[in-house]
Image (tube, rainbow, N blue to C red; front, side):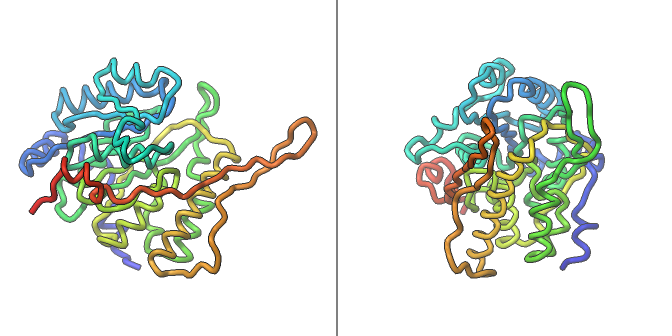
Length: 325
């Protein structure tokens, strides 16, 4: 295990708070930067995210070149609000329709590669209640100031919001500590240095994202880390302390479904990397139980394991983004 990575590749966002320096570095390198917000019924938070990023990182400091929303079929006013505040909004179904369409965060992130124009792409979840432009510039700092860094990942304290006003200071990141960290410890101990591997905020160069597959669902963060480390090594990754992120809480049952997807993605990745040999195919159903009128009944979630190929292999994408010779 690389003992120096944690010290050399871990930063606090304040290290990059001189936004003028970041803008200068961006222009010096001739880069364009896109912010992507994947959404599904985020009408309560999407406006504030767009307003803050647009005012601070486009108007005040020209760090971002575009803000793009990829929507999974919201039934609330997410799309209307996002458009009204100046984001470019794309229903996921309308992007690369000839490639078919699925529901899931990974699907949105994959399709964002086709409709964004940036050399660097920042992905932020759209449900952040304490949004601040540090969530964006903190991730961009290492990419702009260190030539060897190609992918950045956020970590933070994750207090849980209870109701409208109460905040519990601990309890976030449960799937990380109960599922993915034990798996990393068993199989890939070097990756335990990544403090929040399942965080939904990360950024990287297009050349990285276009070269790896994207599972369509919750497994995207796990898959992404494993593929980047396998292809380029841990040293191209940096992690940034954003201090605090407040988000809506998910119940234990929902976290169980997330854990199921993460574990299945992890085991499938290990098999592809030749680290384990599966004697049988993994089942694709998470079976939970619920009490309905005094009867205990199964509640089954099917996970198909659909995975999008590297975007660079899609002809329509290659026509739009020819490889650099």
